[in-house]
Length: 210
Image (cartoon, helix red, strand yellow):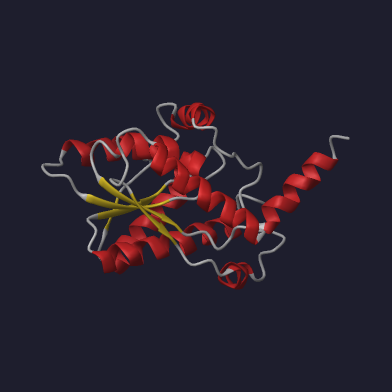
């Protein structure tokens, strides 16, 4: 079975557009959203949903949320055209989801469930707000599983009746461009995904260097 090319699938959706649809974009952080916003704003009216109950500690959540809003305000010609929603922050939601998976390595089942936790909230917002599409910035990371992300999106599309926009934003140098944009806008780039388990894994890796 051939592996799906989600970038080509996105190209096909964009080529078929005969109007400017509304898009609810879940964002994990400003750096990851930088390329995605500059790319998709040409074709969609975008609302960014910053919903990440996995982030630890709370001050990290606040810092990333502030950076996300700052980036949106700083994008040229976009003042007031990209809406921003700061989602509810309740870490218990994440810890309940992760129960029993605390020792699973990064990139495994706990991460897949975390994708769904956040994307489900985006699908709900999209349905309730009457958006045409929803998607997430998560696929821009080389450490995230684009196949799982898109499988989750397609599952949620069926549940909530809102079209999922396929993506693999790391394609076409998306991740590289996001790094360049992060430098251009002087964005805070974290050194761990966000949850306490990813932070512990990063600290363990750092300690092994010395």
